[in-house]
Length: 607
Image (cartoon, rainbow, N blue to C red):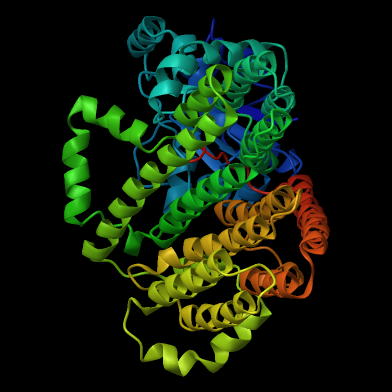
């Protein structure tokens, strides 16, 4: 149980003790710095501890933001400072500094909590100070100031601010105006009944899977029910994040579940639509797989671009394209138009749900493919222009992240070492150009030649060579963030082309399963990097073969096996890859949660 140490002279009529207890703290009193240091030493090192001035006046949510957010080792608001177990050592040092003879800060601060916060800053500790906005957090020095602070507290509705802050600050049009106005109240209802964000996330997944099952019936009633349930799943998907923000229930496991289940829900729904269409005599598995490939590649573009520019040396918004974007953002209606153009998850799921209910699966997939293609063209073109015109230098950390996203296996790594000298002599744009060329060769060959012929295997061997050359030097070029998306598109589209060319019942569903399993591995890599957990272990990448190894194996199977045998091989590969990557992923994230990995909160997909 966390402990709050109230320091200083208690104020008659103050509610600070009851507010701290309502936040889950065990409250103890200290008369001064020596007593506070003694009590601090008695609190187990594995528990959160807070030092709060007894004269504190403010909103309960200000205290909640300052003292209970699990994402930050050290956090403070005026009159209160807290430390999680990983920040206890820094807090103890600052406390000792304040209690030592001649210690203390040079600042004229009249309460111990703020002096400790100042000492932490002087020691170079990273202390989180939440944005309070209209919320009040103060330590009045006299009765008049205390009365004014109380009036300021009474003038602002604490619960209204808390509800508003539960909604994501930047979101799509549909989510902002059609979902969040009421989903926030569902989040509050869940919080008051002790439900957790992970439980709501799981409910959202189950709802989407039921929706997929309804779509798989192939009946008009099933399609209508599927559309309604998909919207309900999205409402719950918004609710889990709002519940996390409302109650500050952030966790590493929760962020992973939220992100992973979003992908599982959407792609399972694609499969349900394809099964439903098949029941009606229409084979749309190629469209379903194409939609999954396109959407996954869109996400890889987002992730790679962001990782390439996440460091301060690469984040300068200096390009003319960025300046134009800023000017457009100053015009109200263009903001919403641009957010809708990129077809974020709210707009995308709303479109899918409506078309499922009123049209056919084929029309739904056509609309989805056209919309996602236009969105991908718009966002990728803007990012290419920004990258070509901005003045920035990529860091080693950004290059390492791009290398991890590339998912190069043993073949590419071995080739990269032997081609390092050649790569250094190539121009700056060589890496993405070579990656694009090699990918285009293998995809075109698989799509344009007869199934069972040797040419796809030859093209795959060329792809291994070009992939090696693309990663033979650090990915620090202006457009090197395009390398991972090019690799993803090449691998996934090769599988799609070969399965379609096999022209045997069940080949495309098997290919859908294989691409889904591999895509999960690639998404898992992204989520580990986002959570500062590093890339998946090298043994997993080697076991999975890397993108170039899998492409070579799949093309070899297409040459050596009959179409029916190829379908079986794809199924076996899909199961094997899924078992390996899921087992390692679940083991890693559950273990990270048990050992108390830093809590994170993923604000969701950018498009």
